[in-house]
Every structure is written in structure tokens, then in C-alpha cells.
Amino acid sequence: MSVDTFFIIQACIAPSVTGVSSPATCFGASDGSVDITVKRWLTSYVITWSNGANSEDIFGLIAGTYTVTVSDAQLSSYNNLCCC
Image 1 (cartoon, one colour):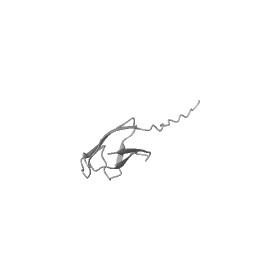
Image 2 (image 1 turned 90 degrees about the vertical axis):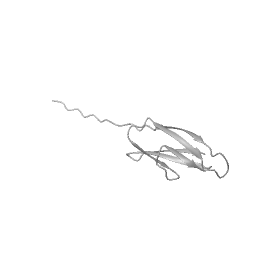
Image 3 (image 1 turned 135 degrees about the vertical axis):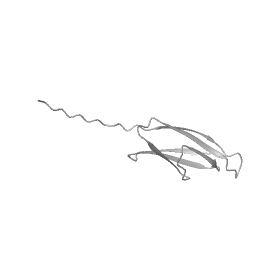
Image 4 (image 1 turned 120 degrees about the vertical axis):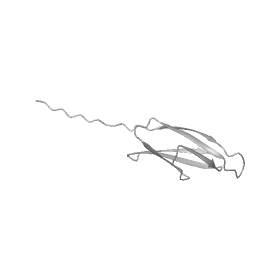
């Protein structure tokens, strides 16, 4: 009798993060937004923005730079920079 051992390895697949930003309408306005979409992630994920938000889309933004981090259950992370 022969016993074979097989190992299933999940490849690390970076997510595809795409986004569209809408800049604030004028100096001092807080009406900018960023709308992102996360694709190709094999597990559930957590989104964390540099302003503390935790959703794919953020609104009510003043002009500036915002960083989004997408992390999976194993804490693998992907960072993306968005300007508003």
C-alpha cells in the first residue's frame, strides 16, 4: 500500500483595487469623495482608510491625500493612495 501526501498551497493573489475620486468643489469645502472597488481577493477583507473610515467608499472629504489599506484574514495587506 502506498500513501501519497499532497499539499494545497493558496497563492498570494494581490487584490485589484480600483477607484474614482471626486475632488472637493472649492477650497475649504468638505464634499470630496473616493469610491473604490476591491476584486480578486480570495478571502474576506478589511478596509482601513488613513482618516479612520472602514468602508469602500468615503464621503465628506476635504482636499488632501488619503491612503487605503486592504487586509485579509492572514493580515496580508495592499496599500493604495488616493487624492481628493
